[in-house]
Length: 300
Image (cartoon, rainbow, N blue to C red):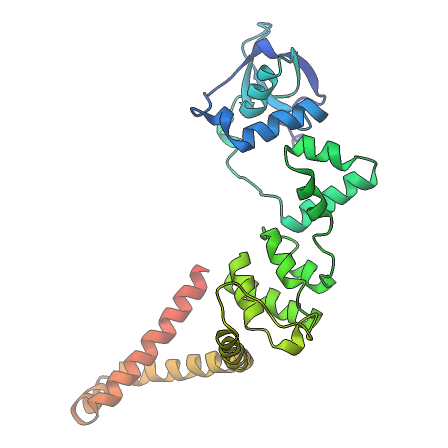
C-alpha cells in the first residue's frame, strides 16, 4: 500500500513577530546601500511582502523560528520597523534546499506582468515607487514590444534580453526581426551591442523605414555597407551548412565505421603504412573526428 505524500510546509501562512525570527546568516557589508536592497525596501513599503518568509520551528513551544529563506526581506522589515511578518512554516530546518537556484524573470515576462498590473488599476507612479525606479522607465517598459512581431516575442519569451535590444529590433521589418532573433539564439547573445551589429549588417530594404539611412554610432556608411555584404555571405553559408549538416554527419559516421574496420585489419594497416602512409594518416584523422563528435553528443 502506497504511503501518503508528506508535504514540506504547514498548510497556512501565519503572521509572526519579527523579533521571534532568528537569521541564519548576516548580510554582506554595505548591502543595505545597494540598488537591489533599496528597491526591495521601497517595494515592501508600498505593497508589503508578497512572498512569505520561510521559517522552521526551534524546539517545541519556544516561540522562536529559524529563518530559512528571506533574509533580505527580514532586513527590510526591520529597517521599516515592521512588527510582524507573513511566514510559511517548514516541517524541517534543512536550509540547504533553499536559495540554490535563482530563476531570473525574462524580459518579455516582466513586460506582461507590468501590463497586467496596469490593467488591474495599479498606477504607473505606484509601480515606479514599488520598484524604486524612475517613472520614465515604467513608461518605456510599457511600449517594449510595440513594433515587434509575434514570432520574435515567442522566440525571446524566456530569454533575459537587454530592453534596448527590442528598440533596435523595432527598426527592422518583421522578417529581418525574425532572422536577427534566430541569430541571437544561435549565438546565445542577446546584448544590445550584438543587436546593433545585426542592424548595421541589415540591408536598407529590410529596415522598417527604408527611406531613412541607418545611423550607427562609431560606424561609417562604408563600414556598414561592407558589413551588409559580409553578413549576407555569412547567412548564405550558414543556411547551406544547416541544410546539408544532417547528411554530412550521416556520411561521416558511415565512412568512419568502414575505415575503422579497414584500419583494424593488421595486414591492410601494414600495407597502407608502407605504400600510402598519407592515406593512413587521413583515415585515422577521419576516425578521430567522428569519435570526437559522438563523445560530445553523448556528453550533451
